[in-house]
Image 1 (spheres, rainbow, N blue to C red):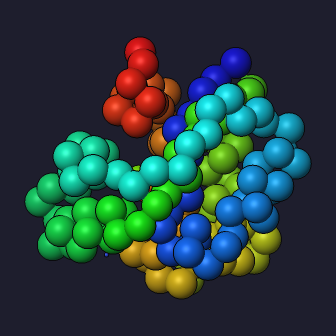
Image 2 (cartoon, rainbow, N blue to C red):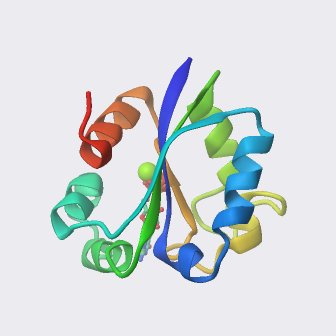
Amino acid sequence: LERTYIMIKPNAVAERHVGDIIARIERTGLSIERMELAVLTEEQAEANYAEHVEKPFFRELVDFITSGPVVKMVVSGESAIKKMRTLMGATNPIDAAPGTIRGDFGLDVAANVIHGSDSPEAAEREIALFFGEE
Ligand code: GTP
Ligand code: MG
């Protein structure tokens, strides 16, 4: 059993895609273990995107992700990380296949609808950061 951290980004919450995205996650057979609507603190956003601190879009990224409520989730099941990355589609919605969450709802690379951990290490770090557990 694997756990992954999933976050529905502010644009998708504002555009009322939450129910549709949750339905897609449940249809894969994965389980939602925890879920919470929250506005991220600046500190959480900066920590989450620490790997991008040198990128020109870092400030834009932090401002965007803190611009409104997000839906934070822990999703679990067999190969949860890979299954969720497949369901999400490519980072840039322009490259994301139709039928993927980003392909269907994504506007551009910043407002790309959803975040999902990309490794078991990232998943544990992000779950600890956003739900305060090991
Ligand atoms: P996450 O699941 O959000 O981590 O996406 P990812 O792993 O598919 O992409 P990556 O970690 O490389 O980038 C993190 C996030 O930075 C992406 O989800 C985008 O929202 C954002 N991002 C990437 N490139 C750009 C860019 O050129 N401009 C802006 N504004 N944001 C970008
Ligand atoms: Mg990433």
